[in-house]
Length: 63
Image (cartoon, rainbow, N blue to C red):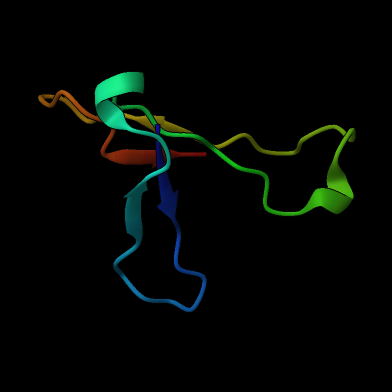
């Protein structure tokens, strides 16, 4: 499991780091919540990782 940090300061480059050992848990990504004040409420948008083919890894953020 990896964690991708989206820069909120306008920078173009985010940060991808291993959250768990990829050899033990595979190579996936988690999507954390940004604002805990909205827990339990309906979402207006959902974000997910996607793949713009041809590729074998998530390389897009989908809203």
